[in-house]
Image 1 (tube, rainbow, N blue to C red):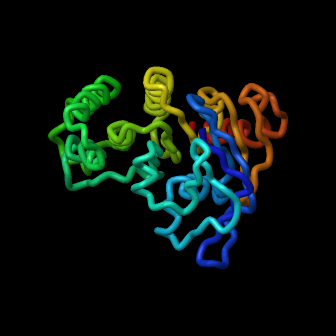
Image 2: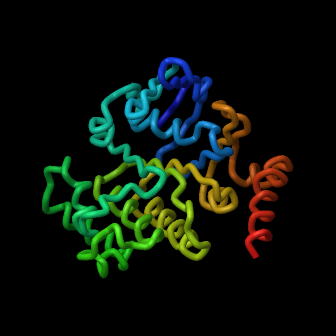
Length: 250
């Protein structure tokens, strides 16, 4: 469905951020992209969604193909029209607008107005809290509520694939579990493919079918998630680090 081949990205014509990465995202799958801060995960998502230009970035080598068609350096709104929707890191909401207005913003490229309200009903089924908060100013929502909002807004754009950047960031464990349960339901019920960038490695490996691990702008290890979970280096570095963080927070 989505294939990156030997993709190189540079910022400002001088800083090499991706050094020739290759990935395949099968239709209907959940694939996770893992790695330390600065590894190039967010840049990878932006190279797909066309948002690199907002940071003076450019794909300088390689190919990015969506169902056999090149989408390298295409304008973001055309990429959204293809069904590729990027849920960015940091819960990018329109804080002065209501919850419902935030949701409806995502439908501005759609012509099927009646179907928009059908999709809004589906979003409210996934996130009943958003229905209860529909008239509330979005800037006053909790972090978990804001994350529900940005995922709901992405769903209203009728995605075929969602690029999710750190959906668990800054959220309590119970909220994270709820968010990931919904993402699994979206994948299974709506048949939406998910490419998931996540620092919560154990959670990401529990929902994804396949994983790629990045370091210094390159793909290192990749494979089925059950194999990655049993990889000694991954268990010691990533999962061990998570356990240490949990102990330190007690």
